Picture: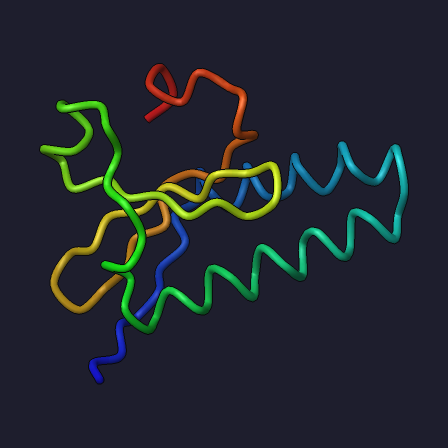
Length: 100
């Protein structure tokens, strides 16, 4: 089984920081648990990232975008060669089309 490198783009890192900051206002334990879960699921993309569905939006699908649902968040990524590029991590109810 092929193993991919996982690269988290600066925009995705910023998204994750903002998620943790917001959740921290509600519960520090929840913030840490959600962050740990995001990191775990993102790291899991090193194995078979193609198992995740492509986006329905044709323009984004043409760019190779896929997504992974992690609780209330969507991890948007592109597989480029041997690298999984994590582009954004957004709240699932946001208008992601305007942000990708």
